[in-house]
Length: 125
Image 1 (cartoon, rainbow, N blue to C red):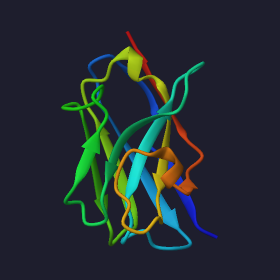
Image 2: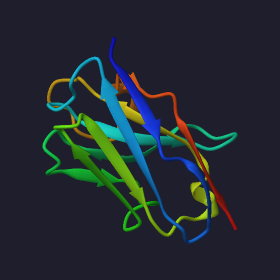
Image 3: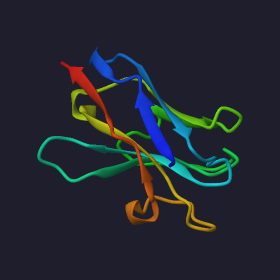
C-alpha cells in the first residue's frame, strides 16, 4: 500500500527556515505530479506548491512565492519543501500529496489522490 510520510516540521522563529521532506513508499511517483498543501486552525486546506514529474515545472501560491522552494529526488522517491523567511501566518499542518491523474499538473486538490498524515509547522513572532 502506497504511503507518503512527511518529516521536518517543528517550531521556528519568524524569519527562520525549515525543510520539509516527504518520502513515498509502496509505489513510485516518479512519473507524477507531487505537491504540498497546508491547513491552519479554523481554515480550509490550501495549496502551497506543486512540482511536475521531472522537476522542470513548479507552481506556488502567491503567499509563499519567493520564500518557498519545492524540489524532488525521483531516485529517492522523495519531495522537499524548503521554507525560508517564515512568517507567523505560515503556521499550519503541512501535507504532502501526489497525483496519479494522467497528465495532471496544478493546484487542484481533488486531483491529488495520495496524502501524507501531515507535519506541524509553527512560526513564532
